[in-house]
Length: 299
Image 1: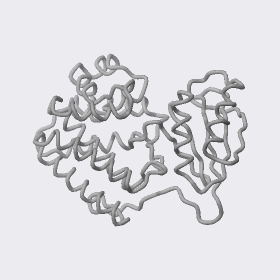
Image 2: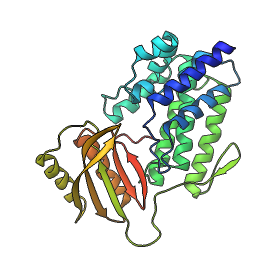
Image 3: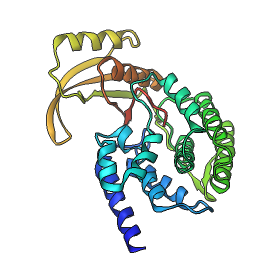
Image 4: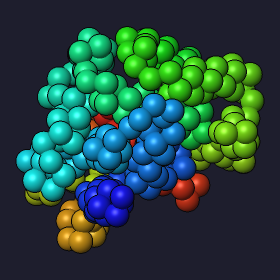
């Protein structure tokens, strides 16, 4: 028992360090570790027996996909079985988004039981996030489409573990109702207030931060291309170079100021910048609130 607690504590520390600079993609910008702890808690609530390796894999399920950590790092620290569960739940990020979604669905039934339990818990946590704090610019239609994708994914694993599937079904029904009725969402009977980017008066000024996540020299051609992409979407904007401290180092960045009511258009621009300039993410600030936008903002 003591050894299990020590391994779980070590995994929590490992995950916290690996994801230390990451936030969830919603407007609330919660620390990413919150998602991992929620997935861990959901797996731990399974009514059937779940072993320590599966609990550790729940904490580490995104560590290879979303951080510089490798399967070898996980295997060396926590064993091959944990690393294999993590591998089963890691997408091939070299594939286009649509292909990744198809591959994820096709692989669901072939996964080990432990990997399926972790994945269903991951889906539950992501659905809750969509209801409470969705990525900026997500319409009700997009949220409902994401919900249907989640239902198909879990249906492909139906029969894995009754209790966690029941939690998913309840969560999916609550999220569906919250989206369609624009109603408060509840988690374990407690009402959660959704947090959205909005503006009380006037036209919001959006700041877009291209943080140069690859830390390379920014040249005139980069500014020219940035201005071209902005001009395709907005009648006017200000672009300025700046210096920033990111990941404990100084680097050159570009900041864009855009006055618009169309937050979705700004999100679209940010996603395009992620792809065009190979950025891990692009920052957006509205009314003093900052969020990260990813090219693949699946929540």
